Image (cartoon, rainbow, N blue to C red; front, side, top):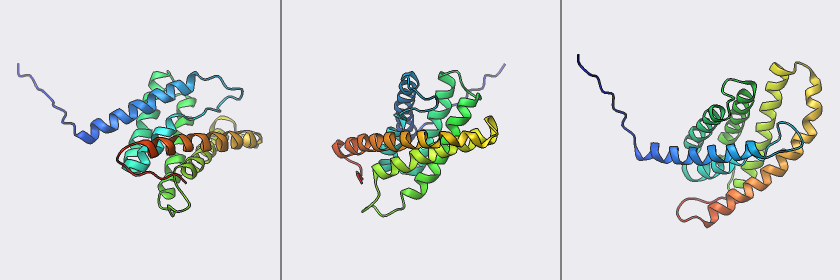
Length: 178
């Protein structure tokens, strides 16, 4: 009997993406452990990693890190293919779409903090849209928008400031802090 061996060849970029995704996954697990008064409201700590990756390595790598975080987080939290997984996926995809455009805005006025706020609002918007279309087919879900908007603004600013601070203190790499 002939034995077949498949070899996976990885690149240094693959290793970098794996390390960054691991950091984002760890922060997502920490996020899930923080009790908050309103279901669905989380600080989004893993978005700090996404912002740093976006600033240093570009949108494509940030999309990989974010996607791996959503999938691995779903597996580790026991929510893969559950409604919470799809809510996370909808938020991540919405954020990535917005960040894809935001990185093209003038650096003079837009940077890590504004990216974070835009991404936080997109995340909540994507989740509310999915909740309305799939989980709660009633416009009453939008009554929660003010609470989620305050959380998105607050956590978006805090996470953006943390990412900007980490980028400013790190050797090598671009740092955008608006």
